[in-house]
Length: 81
Image 1 (cartoon, rainbow, N blue to C red):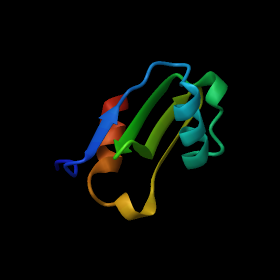
Image 2: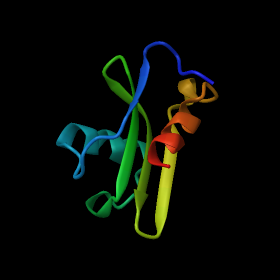
Image 3: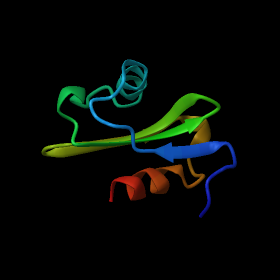
């Protein structure tokens, strides 16, 4: 499945830059952002709309409600595979 035209998935370097860290915390509030071992973010129109975060012993993923079911979840998971 392909992503919507204006959505891109990226694997930013760790630790996350402050703006990306804020977005990741909003999407995955229980994720321990200080110990991430991997991160994939979905961006549309300059805004982070999805995140898949991994850390030792766990992971979390979410996509904003209006963007769900468009292949973004799968693209985020594939970026960290």
